[in-house]
Image (cartoon, rainbow, N blue to C red):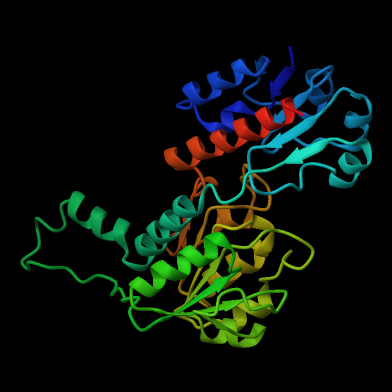
Length: 314
């Protein structure tokens, strides 16, 4: 019977037990909520299948386990596995693609609209009694703006970026996009160059993977190009944005605000520049959750189950 190990089960949530139990039909399964680098080698010893989200699997680990058939990644990104070594050693690596497009797109607009429409500020105004004590039926506070006729900039026109672009269009926004490759990704939307993208966009929405072309792609130069009333949304990867430059841009009113779901280091350390922004009302943070609707996680485990089952049948 094949041996299967989940190295970071907790990353999938505690409401997926039914989907996780299915894997027991494929072999002997061990589940670990989390695995530190010092624990990895021991936990993968003798297994045929490793299921990992963020735990790193390197060449030495693979070489020490010649029986290893498959590394199933419960994510789209594959940067936690040495792919060249896997190919050299005959280990199959399978990831999960396009399982979270709806989830990420929905969270993108939830964060954007909360920030743009000052939802928390208005909620607090009512709950703290200020509205009850007011002589007017309404309180404008900070004005909010409509997305209609605004320019929505998508950084990375993949499956998620495309879905976000469609929703932005439904709000009446004009969509432009920037691709580091310069390739046309979707003819329904306008591909623009680097400078035009940042100068024209009222919203910059990041939906790209982290690689050598996108690392620190948005830093002081790009933030200074942006409009003072522009909003930056990052639900892609933390390393795409220079966090120090973003914190400075927020506090110096170079942009209107930002919503960030992903960070350079995760969990983000308490001394992160984003954790120490002075104008906190202009920044919305969430703990890398955009991908993780219940439906998306169920789909993710379905894909992973099929990947493991397929490898076991070979």
